[in-house]
Length: 97
Image (cartoon, rainbow, N blue to C red):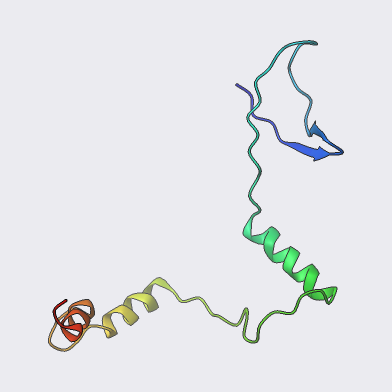
């Protein structure tokens, strides 16, 4: 089985690479749309913002990523001095259902 990438233009799927089929050969096609990558989405948003067609909410893009060590430190800080997990404290606080 071959996998090819094609572009849909004017009602026709146009392969981006030559196909290794003989003339008149019958084939079965499964069409799956490609999902855009995060970078493609980011570029599209940037283009829309630059064109004035879209404005992002305040603070968008200001989120900083944290390291694995910072994440571990943060989760450790969520633990209570009693050693009881936060989820248990929430369940106790809610009371019996």
